[in-house]
Length: 102
Picture: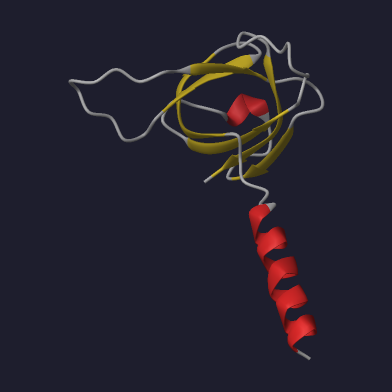
């Protein structure tokens, strides 16, 4: 019986560790023709924070408060999942697979 309990606890820990969290989250700082620039929403005016340009294509799925890329605007809070383009993925070539607007 103990072996089964230990196995189940271990299995649950593995499942929890395989979370499906977003790759990026923050707010939209700028909306461009086929991309958005995302940065942190917790800004200290005396610090600098990285921003990321996330490309949007025909395959990108939109969930939450918007239905289409045309509805994106500055200051929307987003969670973004990106396509895995392999180890050689350039930071300038990040393509979103899913964007959830909160």
